[in-house]
Amino acid sequence: MSPGTGVPASERLTVEGELEDIEEFLYQRGNTDGLPIVPPTPERVARMIEANGLAPDTLIAEKIPPRNGPATVEAIAINAVMAGCRPEYLPVVIAAVEAMTTGGFDLFGVQATTHPCGIVTFVSGPVSQKLDINSGSGALGPGWRANATIGRAIRLILRNLGGAKPGEVDKATQGTPAKYTYCFAENQEQSPWEPFHVERGFAEDASTVTVLGLEGPHDINGQDATKAESFLKILANSITSAGSSNFRFTTGSDLFIALGPEHAAILGREKVGRDEIRAYLFEHARVPVDRLSAEHIERRRTTPAQHGEWDGKTPIPVVKDPSNFLITVVGGAGLHSSWMPSWGGPRHQAVTREIRMNTDHSN
Image (spheres, rainbow, N blue to C red):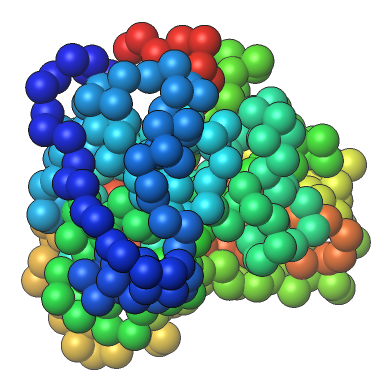
């Protein structure tokens, strides 16, 4: 974070009328996602900033592409207020902005692609309980204020600071409901493995947010599985899609797997770890040649720089490396899991940043 940057304050507007008039005014300006918003009055924005002990002109990111608007604390707080965030959610939103503007994360591509992807905001660590971010039943669905508003704040930031207006900058052919909000937390209490953020190199008592451009969740119905081998076979077959962007661009893009607690328990009982899951999937989650079109085969042969060397016969993995499988536990009761393909841009990998609550705002 860079305090005292001298970045101009956000534009002040005066709108006369009722709440509906304010909503209509901001909608016509292209500042909303189409849903009703909380008016970002100076008082509301100031309360959110002051509650976190930050200077309004602290620069979190120099620019949000493609429009390249600066992401100051004030600008982020305005969008968080509009989304309905509580003040204590702001550090999560800030960490997500830091992550998605990290060098190497192709935010421009995610913003402008024809692919139907949203930016996932995935939280791991004790802050998820402190802020009541849902990690259990329905974590990827509606009904939870923290999940809904944090994810929505990210989308409003992408729209208002990055200019991602559908049909103009945002070129998604069909779009996705994940562009409204896409935030959930890890169900560590029912996971047989170390926390996701610990695996990513952070201290156990830390909390992190991980961002990645992903499709909405695809269900994996594993109700027939009672043994690890049986479930892994279902999992490998479920994520083996010749139509996914992960497969079409086998260049190192990450793929997210959210295991339901009951599926994770099956693997945990047999001491199957994340690395073993990755190794199995890399070997078995492959698309055989007879499922590919002649045009696709020809493109693979003639573009090794994009797809890697290939002999034209061997089944093709859906990722470049086992490490591209990101695995966590999310959800409640029931034998369901999900997978979320990446938008598939070149080497599009997840970025994780620590969430700094209002006691620490240093780099």
